[in-house]
Length: 445
Image (cartoon, rainbow, N blue to C red):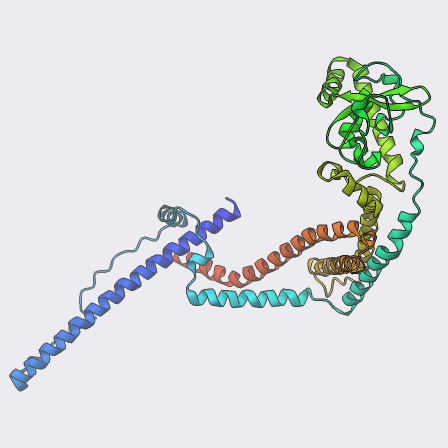
């Protein structure tokens, strides 16, 4: 039997006992009320008789209790299982502690809960050393936001992709197909920026630089669309329209004519399923080629767009964000640096833990409060500063993401520890009651 089931048995038995006691008290009060009425009538009758008979009123002889006949019945005590079965038969639904409390008991319970809450706040409140860590953490986050991050963004290499140097332009094996042995040595098709004379593809990449417009450059979607494009010598746009890439002498890879996006994926699927080892080598080579290309692009000045943003926002907006430095590289750098500072603060703060004075979990609550407050203050001040000076380039998007993540993780952790603390205090308070019940049950048996 699990702990919840045992608790339900206890609560239902307690509720049954409470209801039976209340019912007995109500009946006793009713009998007492009737007895009082009967006694009042008897006294009134005796008074009338005294008036009528004077001193000749007969004396009422009260039977001696010691000699009176008392019918004593033997009480058969029920076992615990029998009591539980009786309670379960009466109460089909779960019983909670609230069902056993009166209004005054509710008030007392809430007062006790407030006392425990104040005790938890006091035990997890900041000490002098914690305030020092908080101010240090805020200062480090601000230095990162306004000095370190801009420095790292300004020292990225040029946007040209090093991984394309020495690679060949796409060959002409056929439509929706790239030779397996040429996948790793050829340029990725979604890097093409020149157009053929076909009017249907003129302006195919209009709206922003080719890394923003093409899904092959998306840090997440690129693993699907980029891999498929590499296997089929195609390019897919942010609106899921595709085009064939062909090699034109003197021009290199060009956007040749429109292609069917659905057919691209059907062709890739058939190649994997029906071309044996060659098909599996083709998809493996395409994945490796995609990884190499993304890695070479992510650290450049133009970098890669925020994952998935090209699909849900206009290319012009994504391009604007890139101009502000809000791209995959920039956000990743901010997130990484913010997390490193949080880790360092947590590690150093842990050195001040004293097991003789502090509880391990409550000390961790203090550590998380330091990180949570410092991140929140730094991010809030950064957003306010960007709005005041109207300069989106100083926005710390990565730090803001870390702050939001900490809001969820740290608050959930603190709430869990607080619940455990409250449960432990209530368990301690009710332990005496449980011991008394156990002792009483042993005596009854």
